[in-house]
Amino acid sequence: MNILLTGAGGQIGADLVGALVAAGHRVVATDLRPQAAGQGATWRTLDVTDAAAVDAVIADERPDTVFHLAAILSASGERTPAQAYAVNQTGTWNLLEACRIHGVTRFIFTSTIAVYGPGLPDPCPDDVPLHPTTMYGVTKASGELLCEYYWKKHGLDCRGVRFPGLISAALPGGGSTDYALFMYVDGIRHGGYESFARADTRVPLMYMPDGVRALLELAAAPRPQLSRCVYNIAAFSPRADQIAASVARAVPGIRITYAPDPLRQGILDSWPRALDDRLARDDWGWRAAYSLDAMTDDLVPKVRALLDQRAGLAP
Ligand code: SER
Image (tube, rainbow, N blue to C red; front, side, top):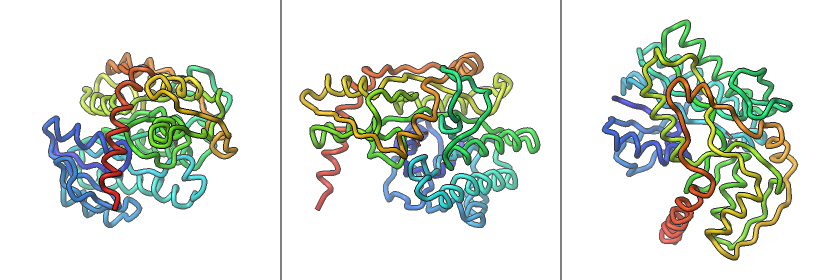
C-alpha cells in the first residue's frame, strides 16, 4: 500500500513508521520537522493546520491509506488550547477533506481515553456519554464523530482506536500519562523520579508494540467485520506505585516519590481506570500481548539504549 502518516515524528510514529516499512509498504512520513534519515520512509514537511499544504501533499503523494497521528496531547493542550484546537480539530478536518477530495480509500484515526469524562463505569465500554474535560479530549471526541460522518456520508473508510496512555522508549511529549514513562526514563538516567501523579493513580496504559500492532491489525481488517469506526483497546491499568515497583525490580535502587501536580492529576482523575475492549476483540480479534512486567523487561534495555544514543549525540 501507499501510506502517508501525519505527525510521524512523534511517539507513535517512532515505532509505526519502521513497522509499516518492514511490512513492505511505501511510506511517506510527514511532520512539522521531518527527519533526514527516517527508517526507510520518505519524509516531507507538513503542518496539518495548513489546509492548502495538506491538500497539496495528498494530491501529490496519492496515498491509499492515511494514518493521522498529529496531535497536541492532554497536558500540553491545556497550556495552549488554541493550538490544540488548530492541530487536533482543524488538522483532522483538513486531512479528512483532502482524503475525500483525492479519493483516499482508508483513514486511520488515533483517539484516546481522554474522550471520556468523570463518573463512568470501570471498565468503561465504547458507547457512553462523552464529556471530556480537556481540549485534547474535546477535539478527539469530535474527530471520532467526523470519522463516522465521513464514513457514512462519503464512504471514506475511517477506522480508529482509543489508545490508553502509551509507553515506549521515547522522551515524554506532553501527555498526562507521562508520569509512567518518566519512571523508566528518569529512573534510569537520574536514579529516581518525583511523580506528578499520586501513588494510587490508576489509568489504562499500553506498551507501544501492542499499540502499533493494534493499528496494523485494525487497518488490515475486512470492513464487513467492523461494526463501528473507533474502538476501545485495553492492556493493563496498574496503580502508579505498582509501575514504580515494576521498574524497581528491573532497575534496583531507584527512588520514586510523589508530588501530585493539580492540572495533570485532575486530568488523570477524570478518566476511567480501565477500558472494556470487548468489541475490538470480537470484531477484529484484538488482544494485548504485554503485561506490565513483560513491558518493563522489554523496555528497560531499550530506554538505556535510547539514553546512550542521545548522550553520544550530545556535543
Ligand atoms: N497519553 C495521552 C495523554 O496523556 C492520553 O491519550 O494525553
